[in-house]
Length: 171
Ligand SMILES: [Zn+2]
Image (cartoon, rainbow, N blue to C red; front, top):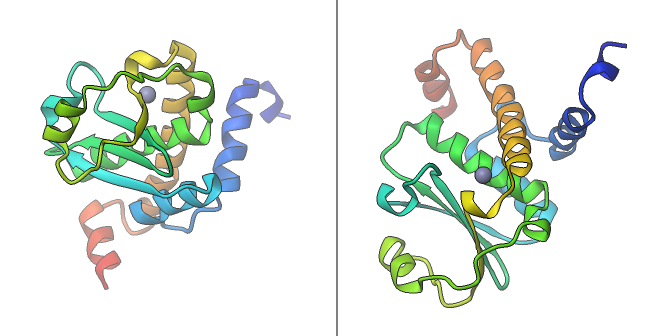
């Protein structure tokens, strides 16, 4: 079978996508809720000034005592923002908080300034690009791309025009 020639990790990632049981087409909220439900922890998604997440990564995961916060760079296209969030969700689905060494000494002043609406006092760990191995980054990006490709293929069904999908989605 053709499938057996794929790397094992890719099959593993495809299984995760199947288990996520996303509606077709999925919305960003439905995607976030699906991961939150599977983890049993609420996920808060907050746009922040690009300055906080500069330096090669556009998203940041704040693991708090009872929930998780995803900070993502504002001022980018809708599809790019969704991909950034998707990448952080992929790290969560892959359980990278259990294997990566997150930062525990967080500059809460910088965080509080960047995301004033987010309570940063009970942040337990912060995960950004520098906290993951290259393999973890590769897996997260591949999983994010697999999830996003499902989204794109549903757009093709409506003629491939993202604007048309958005309008259709509005009604
Ligand atoms: Zn990453």
